[in-house]
Length: 112
Length: 117
Figure 1: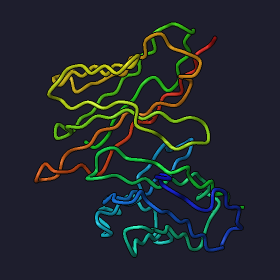
Figure 2: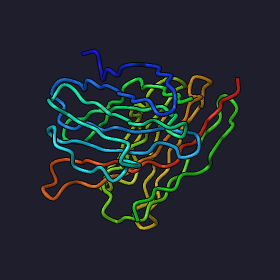
Figure 3: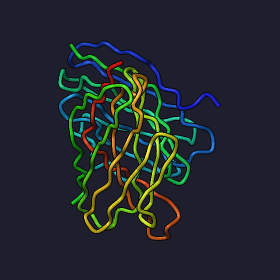
């Protein structure tokens, strides 16, 4: 198995632009998590899905952030409009029945 | 009540020494306590995990000690090696009502471990 796949690995954009991050979870996993990691705030859970249904989005910072999981093999995290304070590494993780979470390599987002 | 507090923020150890990282939690419903290891430029990866029915779990050089009454757990790395240099996160979660799955992990702030050769 290739593990959790995230794209792009790096994204540089200008303030105000829309950013879309993509994630392909491990096949057969029923949970998918989106995290944000910064030096100041550490590893923050943004939202997680169970069987493609959003369960807890209390960590989504603002209405500028949205996440979807149209099917079991794909999820997106969208930021519109992006701001410099959104600069961070965004991780996607998946798990089976919520036990061990397998993290992807992350997307490093820089908003200028 | 959802917080997991981790200390120290950073730790420097000589090769062969023992590294100890501590975590404390408040939510008594937590019943799954994993430790994740993260190398620079990579995502975190599960290192070892414990459930509160045991007080200690050992896997190779890595040991989790768990104190349910104190609501504390710790990671001990014996014979620390330069290759152990990484960021370590403790975490905690609780099972769903049916006890069949765990969802949200609450992570500690992380400890940057440096092992000098």
